[in-house]
Amino acid sequence: MAFIVRQSGRLVGTFNNYLQPAHIGKRCISTSKKNDETAVVTEKIPSHKATQNSHDVNTTAAATAAKKWMSYGFHPTDQYEDVASAHVFSFLGVTLCMVLGSLVYYYGPDRTLKDWAQREAYLLVREREANGLPLLDPNYVEESKIVLPSEEELGDFEIII
Amino acid sequence: MLMLKFGLCCLGMMFLLKEWLLLISVLTILTFFCLTFMMNFDLGVINLIQLDFLTYLLVSLSLWVTALMIVMSFYIKHSKNYFEVFTSLSLAMLFFLVVSFSTSNLLMFYIMFESTLIPIFLMVMGWGYQPERVSASFYLLFYTLTASLPLLMGILYINSQQFSTDFSSLVVPNSDYLLFWMLIIAFLVKLPVYLGHLWLPKAHVEAPVAGSMILAGVLLKLGGYGLIRFLPFVENSLSEFSVLLVSIGCIGGVLASIICMRQTDCKSLVAYSSIAHMALVVVGISLNSFISVAGAVIIMIAHGFCSSGLFSLVGMIYDRVSTRSIILIRGIVSVGPSMTLWWFLFSISNMAAPPTPSLMGEIYIFMSSLNWAGVLAVFVGTLSFFAGAYNLYLFVSTQHGTNLSGCKSFTEVSVREHFVLISHMLPFLLFLVLLTNIYS
Image (cartoon, rainbow over all chains, first blue to last red):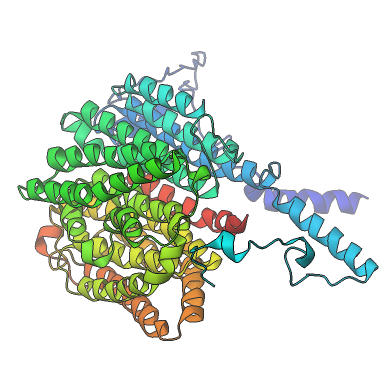
C-alpha cells in the first residue's frame, strides 16, 4: 500500500506538467513588495484604447483585433453592419435554406405521393401474382371497353401513328 | 390567392429597397417557403395558378438567383449608382418571372414573358460597362420582340377557335404548320437556338454581373419552359418538324461549342457555352419522349446554377483586374488560389462532370437521342467533347501560367463572394436528388 502511494506520487509529479495548463499559477498579477507593505492587487479594467503601459493580454488583443479588422465584403467601412450582414446571410442562406430546407424536403410528408405509389405498386403486384394475372397487361385499357369512332365520324381527321 | 399574396409581398419589398439586408433576408425566406411548402400541385383553374414540378423548380431558381444577384451587386450600392432603382428592377423581374412560370393562362404568360424584357433592357442599358451596351440592349429587345409577335397572334387565334386561353382546356388541333411555327419561334429565339442566337453574346458581354446572372440563370429558361408548355398542344405538327429542330439543335450546338474555343472574352465564352447547353435542351424537347424532356429540364436547372456561378466568377475577376480578356487574365492560382478552387468546381460542372446534375441531364438526352437516331451519337458526342475542351481552355488559360504584372495586386476572395459561390454550388449538388423525382 505504501509502495503504491509512493509510486503514484512520483507518477503524478512526472505528469504534472502535462496534466495542468502551463500558465496556471505561473504568472504573478500582484505587484506586492516583499517587505512591510501589504499586497495590493490592482485590477486592470480592460479598455478599448490600447495604452502604452497596458500589460493586460485581453486589452491588447481587443485593440489589435479592432485595428486589424478585415471586411467580410458586405460593407467596406462599417464593421457592425458588415459582421451583422455576414451573420444574417450565413443563417438564412445556409442554415435555413440549405440545411433546414433539405431536412424538410427529405423528411417531410409525401406530397407528390411517390412513396405511396411504390407501396401501391408492390401491393398490386402481390395481388396479381396471387390471382395468376400477368404483372403488366400489354393493353393499358381493356380492349372490350374501347369504343372507336366510325369512319363517318372521323371524316378527314388526321391519324398519326 | 397565392399569386395575389406574392404580388403584395413583392410590392411590400419595394419599401425595403433601402434596407437591402432585410430585402435579401425576405427573398431567402421566400425561397425556403417555396422549396418546402410549394409541393402541393393543385389545379388552380379559378385563380390562374397551375403548378407542377417544373413550375416549382423554376420559381425556386428565380427566387434564389434574384437574391444572389442582389448580393453580387453591392458595388452598385457602394458607388451610389442608383441601387434602389436597380433592386426595384430586380424585384419587378422576379415578379414577372414567378407569374409567368406559375400561370395557366396563355395570355397572362405572354404578357409576363414580354414584361421580363423591360427590366433586363434597363439593367443592360443603365448599369452596363461599355458604350456598346446600347446596341446590345437593342439586339436583346428587338430579337425577342420580333420573334414573339407571332406568339401573340397564335394565342389570339387559339382564343378565337377554342374560346379559352387556359392550358388545361386546350384541345389538340389537326396539324397546323403555321400555328406550330407561330407558337414556337419565340421560344427558340429566347433559348436561344443557334440561328437566332446573335443577341445573347452581345447582351451577356455588355450586361452587369447581376444582369448576366439573371439572364443566364432564369431568363433563358423561359424559352425552354414555353416549349415544354406549348409543344403538347402542337404535337401533331412536331412529328413533321422534329427532324429539323433536332438537326438545328445538334449542329448548332456543335458550332457554338467550336466558336467557344475561339473566344477571347471570358463572358462571351460562357455565353456561347449557354447556347451549346440550350441546344441540348432543344434536342431533348424536340425528341418528345419522357426521358428526353426530363433530361432537358434537368439541364435547364443545372445550367441555371452553373452559368450564373460562372458569370459571378468572371465578375469577381473583372472587379479586380478590370478586364475580361482571356489573354490578360492569367495565373490566378498564384495570386488567388481560393478563387481557383471555385473556377475549377464551376468549370467541371459546366462540362458535366460527375456527380453534378448536368451529367444526369446529358445522359438522359444522349440515351433518348441515340434511341431516336444512331447518327446523333456523332453530334452529341462532339458537343460533349467540345464542352470539356472549352471549359478546360477557360480554366487553364485563366488560372495557370505566369500572371501579368497588372494582375499582381489581387484581393483575396471575400466572405461575401464565398457565400455567393457556395450558394450556387451547394444547392446545385443538393438538387441532384430532387431532380431524380422528376418522374413524379
